[in-house]
Image 1 (cartoon, rainbow, N blue to C red):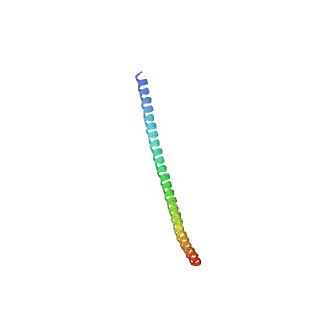
Image 2: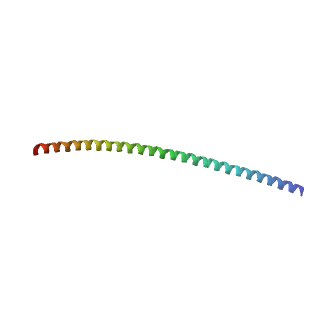
Amino acid sequence: MSENEDKLLLVLGEIKGELKGIRELVHSSGESTNKRIDDLNGAINSRIQDHQNSTDTRFNEMNDKINRKSTMLGGGSGALAAGVIEVIKRTLT
């Protein structure tokens, strides 16, 4: 029986070693998967932030153009209205 027990202990030791290797492999695989997920998350967040910055820049440029045009049109309209009022004053007097 001692020989059978030795064989059994040897087989159990091999199984334990293989299970330990599998456990380490699964753990390592999980770590590398998490690393890839973190890298992907960082890349996506960076692209979203770049897109947001680009959109904000374009919006601000369009808003500035609208403000400049409104200011010019408002000034021009005011000058035109003042001119019309002066013409009406002169024609009525």
